[in-house]
Image (cartoon, rainbow, N blue to C red; front, side, top):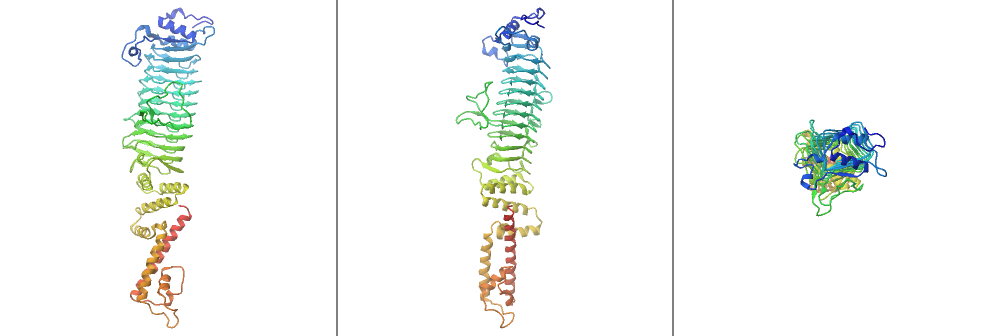
Length: 533
């Protein structure tokens, strides 16, 4: 322990030259740089051994952080250490660390233990770390871990980050439970930036809350032998979740970079990109996203039993613009979005898409997505007939003024429903479809009526029936007689005055039945249109 006003280290510490340099730099707020000037030997992730001239005991680092010496007059104390090899376990669990902390290009011999500690700002940049244990960590400012390589996982359960959490270009391997980053209940007041992150294991963000945006642009999440590569049910992101490509040229991966809010970050033309890739399942069930969920250029590599699950998510805009998954399933059951921005080439085929209860208001297709392909999209999502996807698509088309397309969708629904009916009902359905397309094409009824009227007129002109009562029948008119037989409700005082027999009786019966069929199907179609179904 140091005494107030005393800037010297306790004698029993027996500081090495590297530790003495670090001690003095802490009091000055300056950087203690232990690099030797050879990029290959200064690389913390390389194979070269680091000698004693770069070794700093974790005990001395902890003493500076928890009970360090006072700053030099006119300076602010801060731990800024570069190129050091920190031996033993750095353990400040439960401590309150007031100085600014930035460790850059450092190697840690053992895990970094930070549970329930409190920092102002903590930055570990391009460091090699066996493990980061930081459950319930609190920071007033940033927590930065860019370009670090962590061999056995990061634990940030219930941590609270005062501003930004940065994991750009970090490489994290799984722990003994198979998790790379365990951050359930995490709260980040501003952005969580994890662009070009490499995660080998399950990235868990269950119940996490992000105050602005969550960016995983260009990241690669790999957990092929586990159930999920990203497990984030009940995730709340106040703005946008980016699972998109990142530009490899001129990309702003500095520790101070914060993307603009509310815009779509698309690399400019000609820029090499690294797309977001997820090898394994993804779960975003019950998530809430204030602006959008963006899957542009995303690639999903799943096994047959794995899922991209978006059950019951809520967001103003879903941009499903990635590469079509070859295996696995995309689940949208119960999801609610306002704008669905999609491409026909992004959706999986038959059996790979479930969207029972999926609600959207406006379709915004990118590229060629005609109604025929949209109907295939609905059919792929309903291996067994369900009316809701068809009705939702028709409602969306009507909202944008495409009433004719909406009727085509509802006709496709009736045809799909017919496949589930018994034989008699199926035959009746075929008849309705062939005649007036279930009432969705009422013009067909007029055509059939005209054809039957013409046939009846010709037939009865050649074979007029005798009057029912001699002297009481009106003047014979084959046109009016045929029309009276066809119209099931209107009485033209013709059919009751004549008594057809033989073939004429059969012809009259055919016209009467045909008239009732046409009238019934037209009435059914009209009632559907009036109900806007």
